[in-house]
Image (cartoon, rainbow, N blue to C red; front, side, top):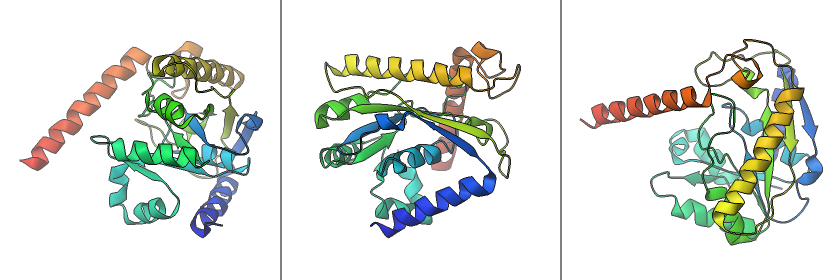
Length: 249
């Protein structure tokens, strides 16, 4: 039953209702009803995990997310990690988290992660980390691309939160499962191709007003290009490293 997870599901649905968020789910039949699966989710927002989790929920499954270990420092989050089979990942030494993810996959669980690792400021698909492909191959389970679009209008990097009863439309689309075949590089490339194709389709059918900050430049928006976004990300990393060094000193 997992009472903590059940409470989270009820709270998530209530939050969607209160904010008036209009979520459209597409092709959820691509999420397997049984057996292990890696959910590979694009990352444009601080809240894309919520509609993605609901998509899996509406297939009668529960998603076991991989999140950064620093979140354990937040007391309530640490409680939820311990009671929802969430996998805390230490980015400096992630072997234990990886092994736990593979164990859960082999046990028939759905493991969710954002293979881009960090939010895409361009709202295009960034280079993927190979962890999703590696664990899918080792566990012998499919990867299911899951595109979440529209949530970048609610809360993303470099822009104020747009929280409240805004009735922002969101699309969650599941792609064709990518079967565990070939080597890591081949599987990673296949996942990227499927995610990119699906992302472009969803973006093009969603309204994309000219000049909007949450629209990619490819569609006439004012979001940074992928090259510009990479520079911003490197600047951010440098600044974080400087602050860590100052605290250490």
